[in-house]
Structure formats: C-alpha cells, structure tokens
Length: 533
Image 1 (cartoon, rainbow, N blue to C red):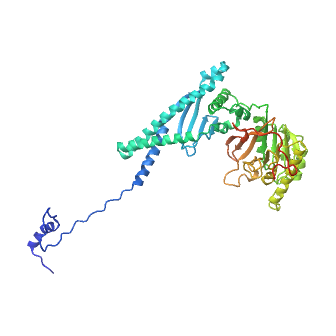
Image 2 (cartoon, helix red, strand yellow; image 1 turned 30 degrees about the vertical axis):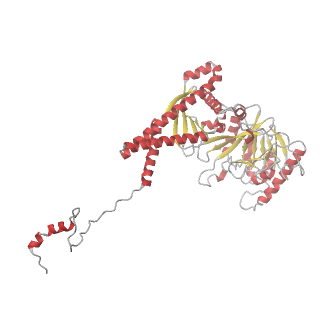
Image 3 (cartoon, rainbow, N blue to C red; image 1 turned 90 degrees about the horizontal axis):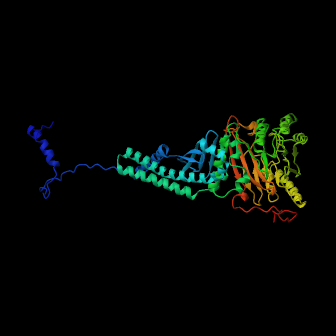
C-alpha cells in the first residue's frame, strides 16, 4: 500500500485547477513543463433542411384547407336560386353542382387540385313567381345567370385568397410562434391557390356541360339538360349552356308531385340498347321504366337474354310482349335455337340472324346470332375463329344491302370479335358479351358500342368482390340522316345497392364545330367494300 501525506491531499484541488487552467495571452509554457490537456468538445447536431421544408408544406396545406372550409364559402343568388359556392381540395378538379335533395351533377370542367362546389340551397319564391307570372322574362334569364355566376366567382376568388392566407398564417404562428414563419406560410398558401387558378384556367373545358354525370334522383330526369339535338343546335358558349342548365333545374323545382318526364324531340329516334340480361327478372321493370321515361322508340337486345337456353326458361321472356315497343333481338352464346323460335312468335319482336335486315322504328337494322352455344363448361367453344366467320357473313350481308340501295344504319352481333368484322360497312355496330360498357371507333370509321349487363350478370352478380352493376344505354339518332347524335349511359347499383348514374356523351361528329358526315353511301370497290384496299 502506498501512503500519501495529508499535505499532498490538501493541495490536490489546486493542482487539478492548475493543470487545466488556460494560459494567459502572450504567456509561454515553462521549460520542461508538459502540455496541458484540452477539454473535450461536443459535436453540434447537423441541420436537416428537408425536414423543416416538409413540416412547412404540411402546415401550408392543412392551414389552407381549414381556411377554405371555415370561411371560404360565398352565398350568392344565381337567377331565381340561392346558392353557396366553395372551393374544395381535389385530386382531379372539376365542378360539382349539388341539387339537394334530388342529387348532383358532376362536370369535368378543369384539371386542378381544387374542385368548385355549387350547392343549390333553395328556390327564391318571389323571383320564381315573377317568372311564372311573366314568362317573357325567361328570355333574359340567361344574361342574368351569366352575370350572377361571374359576380359570384369573383367574390369566391377574393374570399378564398383571404381564407387560405388567414388559415395557413394562423396555423403557422401556432406551430412556430414566429411572425416571419406565419407570413411565409400565408404567402405560400396564396401562391398555391394562384397556381391552382392558373391550372384551372389553362385546362378549362367549356364543353364539359354537354356531358354531365348525374347521380341520385336526377339520374331519372334526363330533361334537366334537354334533349341531345337541342344541346348541340343551341350551343354557343359555356355561359349560355350554364343558363340553360339552371333554367331547367328551376322548372324541375317547380314540379312538386313528380319529376318532369322527358320531352321527346320529334326529329330524334330513341333506341334503348340492352344486353346480357341472364334471367334477371328485375331487368324487365327497369327496361319498362326506361321506355316510359325516355319515350323509347325501339329496344335492341344484343343477346344472352337467357342463361341455359332451355324450354323451361321460355316463360321468362313473356314480359317482352307487354313493353309496348318493337324489340330487336339477336342470339347470344347462352341463347338456344329454342329460345329464338319462341321469340319469333311474339308480335313485337324482330329476330335478326344470318345478316337479315329489317327496318324498325325508322332505322334499318341487320344482325347475326352467335355461332356458338356455350351455356356451360361442358361445351367446347369454337373460339374467335368461329366469331370472325360469323362477322364476315354479316359483313357480306351489309355489302349486299348497300349494293341494293338499302344501306343498313345499325348492325348487331353478340360478340365484339364478330362485331369488329363489320368495320367500314356500317356507321354503328352494337354488341355485348363482356358484361361491361365500352365505346370504340374502329380503324375504318365504324363506331362499336358495347353494352354492359342489363341483368347485372344475372346469377353471376355476386361472383366478384362487388355486385355487378346494371347497365343500359339510350341512343339518340337523327331522323333524317339516321346518324348517332348522342347516348346516355345508364348505370344502376348491382344486387343490394341503390345507386344510379347517367352520363351523357356526344358523338365526335356531333360536337360543336364538327363537320357533319356525308349521308351518301361510300363508293364501293372490291365487291362493294369501301374499307379494304
């Protein structure tokens, strides 16, 4: 053991302090003295600027959204209605017009991270009564609506700018406790809103009002935007169509007992296209309702009305005789010859097969039944080769009709593979089979319209994750040229669902500014075909 004198222990603090005492400026270390150790230094934390930028971005977005939600609404009268306009964050943009409690109309008006919401709050009774008492004032309603919308949009832009600045600035101050950071957040929010406005202006689509999507009860009221021919002939600018829309909504509110029925245009032929009913008894009630609501002239069924095509199923077809309009039908791969013979005995049914052509409701139709009968997996299908062969037979029949001076307006086949073989010989071909709606312009000018399942795929409705929807289309034809003008794609919720949506679409050659196609038959060559070199 080493013993340390008490005097040395008493001097230890002074010795320690002397060892770590910093030398005075200008002093030199004594000769032979050891260098004094330096105190340890702690490394400073490295700054992370991306983390701060991410936090500021979150503050700007959340604050701007809260500002729009709380103070970003503008109440403004539009014609005889009181409305509330607001901007809401959105990934796709667009405009949504809520007509409570009837439903909503959605327009693809622009692409921007904000959506314009217009809520129709109520109909002003005094201004509405003035329109009823003085119908001559309706002619000036369009100018009034345009002025009201412009004024409301300007107010909304100013209020939205103030809302995003206040919202982002207040949240920035609450988070950072620094006025400079709060001002930065408010400025960034205003810049984001301005950029969204520029994007909306650059992508503004005034024709979107021609193809709205309806939901709720409005889906059963196609007269809200008028008939297809009136939309095109009266189209001038977006403001006029908006006024037309508001005027029709006003008329809709004026009816208290029932929704207004569709007013048929005398120069328009309306065709209801259904397909793939697959023994769903609910389909007949839906079809009967559409016939009445849209004043349908002709129904076209592109096949698979049955499921196994047995004679025991024939009773399912009896409601067709009570629909009150001609029913044009072609055989699908789930329909048998027995099914076809049963339908041929009904007075209002026109069965088309082997390219046979019939004039029904002012239009000339030609069709062919599916060459394959495959009600279950026990039958080996012939595949696409059999369908193409049937399509060629239909194509040959179409050429013969044209050579005889009786060109066909609409061709019908069940399978899309067969339908595509008619390209260039007919303006429009209808089909089904795939249980989903589709539209395609074929290389030689023929439009192919594929219908979904009007029976919600029948017994197969619950095979997928979600119930299959019930789909049908109302096609509008010009009575003089027999050309397709527009169509309403109708989509109803499947089994257990109560939703409805109607989307209006215009044919490409019927859009504003398009040149109408010639109604004269194309010159034939190579046996009458104008599509193959």
